[in-house]
Amino acid sequence: MDYRTATPGDLAEIFRNLSLRMADQYTAAGLNIEDAKDEFLMSLKEGRAHTLLESGNPVAIIAWQETGETAQTAFAAHESFFARGSVRFCKAHIRRIQALCGNLPIDSFSWSDRPEIAKWFRVLGFREKGKENGYTVYELDRA
Image (cartoon, rainbow, N blue to C red; front, side, top):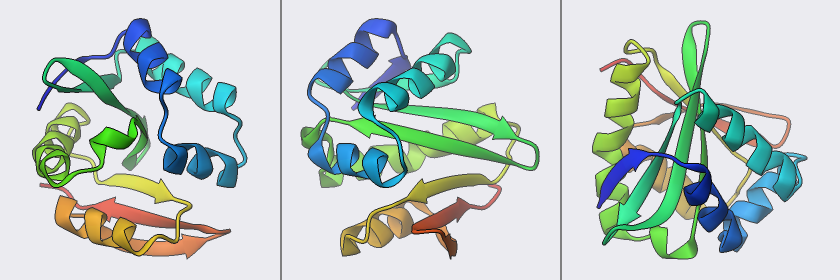
């Protein structure tokens, strides 16, 4: 896997074949697909989004925003992204993003109750910070 700064074409490609589990997350968060896409586009325009590539093809986008004492991430992916190798790549990549944010703790939100979600966050180095209004907040402490 590799990454690059996200482009509008990458965003269109990811959302054209968006994983159903990602679409379910947006719905649970109260967003429709267009709202979610617009949120990513704002981050992309600010230079705060990376496209994750598998064999040169876009499979996911991760965006981030600094919010005072933490940075928050947003994620969109094709179903093909959800594999062991992708998770290992993301473990290193999330630390790159953290460095870009001045080593702030990173918060990520999940509206899914799928058991593998908590496991994936643990593998990435996150810990469960708490549950609120139907979602779980996971936090990656400073490096």
